[in-house]
Length: 276
Image (cartoon, rainbow, N blue to C red):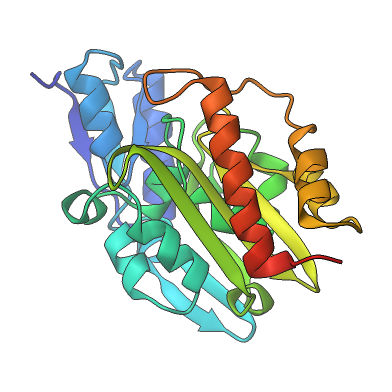
């Protein structure tokens, strides 16, 4: 059974911000809602107790997909299906196509996935790799900030703020890429490890989901993969940089995840790197 809450659907940034402030003052613990799949699930499990949800899908800026010169603007409430069907950012389309199943992708949104609480949140990976800029709405107005300043395992938004758009430079849209997802049960079940990688100015960039309890840009792994040497030498050095809280659950042990990651890195190097 889903707990009760009040539902609001503002049609502008200012209306959403004003609603949040009003509901917060009333003690309703409001939350912004874009796709809604996670909020509904958590309410069913009695894990969250928000008295009000603010659906931002009717805010025009949140539904945009446009090119303006060398910048691609992606609205945060576009469904993963809609993003998948847009081919301007092939890496992002590929990653979105691998999230959940088609029915779920019709509901899950790009921003909802990135701002969620699950371990995986694979949609963050292409944006981390492309140094995307985030457009954030809040009480102080609209601000733009690079993703690495705000995404520290989770998107660190101020109270009352929400993600409006993601901005990507054209050069990253055209970069060679590869994205590999491995599941314990082949093509079904939860992901075990997802690795997305692209080559920018002859350097490999890499981001990982499913290794730690959050997606991340693997800066130290990148450094080792871009050093001189054979693929084997670079991959062995890269794996030694892994020192975070590697997940260990029913999907796979920490050692198994590292084994899977090692094999994926060989595929990445073959596709994007080669030997130096």
